[in-house]
Amino acid sequence: MRYEELTIEGRNAVLEAFRSGKTIDKLFVLDGCQDGPIKSITREARKHDTIINYVARERLDQLSETKKHQGVVAFAAAYEYAEVEDILRLAEEKGEPPFIFLLDNIEDPHNLGAIIRTANLAGAHGVIIPKRRAVGLTATVAKTSAGAINYTPVAKVTNLSATIQELKDKGLWFVCADMDGTRMYDLDLKGPIGLVIGSEGEGVSRLVKEQCDFVAAIPMKGDIDSLNASVAAGVLAYEIVRQRQ
Figure 1 (cartoon, rainbow, N blue to C red):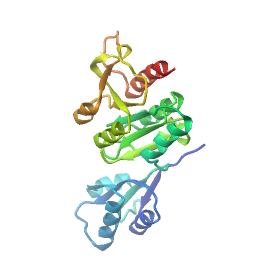
Figure 2: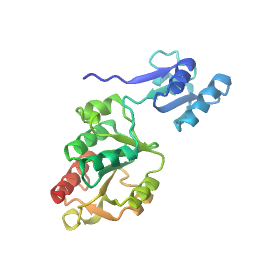
Figure 3: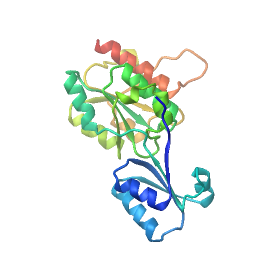
Figure 4: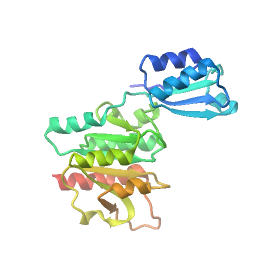
């Protein structure tokens, strides 16, 4: 299947996209422009909790495909997002304890796509990403997932730490990946679990890490001290799979 990025430009087109219910991941607006149409667009964006970026004209020109952006460019998701409840419902329907991936600061679409693919193959019930500092469901993500995006629900939340706490109240516990943690083979990773993966550069953020019940380290024997985020997700996910069987 061929996927296409959906870039929406022009004031009327962007406003209609919001009003029609299309999921807009990011909105870029010309900095300093506050006329009526722009105010209407940003008002709709806030209603939908869309991230608004105020940028210079040069940046808008770079983002624009038509060069007729009229001071506004929007990027729509290539796929519809699920709700966290949809992920929990899927686990319930399968009669399995929930197994969820939570991604913190993953901004590379290839990493996100690869992780969604791994999540599907490992039998995870869904993936949760934050709204800020994260890539959305772009066409590149869809391609890299090799079709897994059609089967594995992805939810986007405003606050990852708050979502973890809400899921803890529903019986899940959480493990995050960090080189300073306990060797993953020494942890009990069975039961309803959330696997938290951070970016290669920054890892899992402090606030999210503090919410986790365990910190798992992947044994490494080489000369460097970190794995690609999608590879780390795969290694830990399959240790969870091994223990769940």
